Length: 151
Image 1: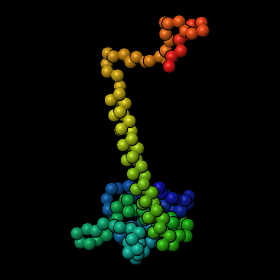
Image 2 (image 1 turned 90 degrees about the horizontal axis):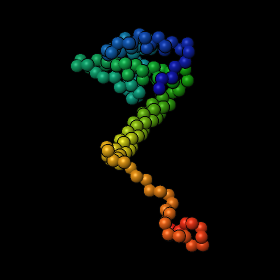
Image 3 (image 1 turned 60 degrees about the vertical axis):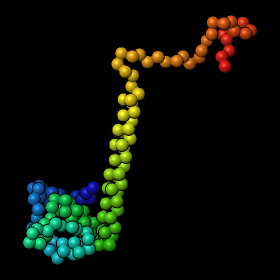
Image 4 (image 1 turned 45 degrees about the vertical axis):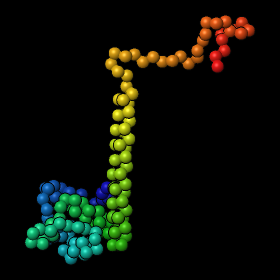
């Protein structure tokens, strides 16, 4: 879930980063008009987790940039401090994990239902007979009602 506001400048960021590559810290800082130290601070606080190259250079993926955009919208547009951002990100990750678990449960139930429906399905060439709701007898019923009481 991305939270962007009209006129906040983030709508152009997605078009600037359509490639599937990784970005160095200087390129990211320039794209988002923030100081590289801000990115290092976000990493130190655990808000961002860029990967590292063999030479230990920070490399930001498209997913990292989406997360950065969310962080910047919380900080700049909503005035949330770093502790608040950390809580929001943690809650967001928990919700995503719960959503994955719920989807797994729904998939399991769907599979079980389909399996049981196929197990109970009539075999080809066989006709399912339904038992009548009320059973009548040919013996005369008491008191001339024409039906026999069935117990």
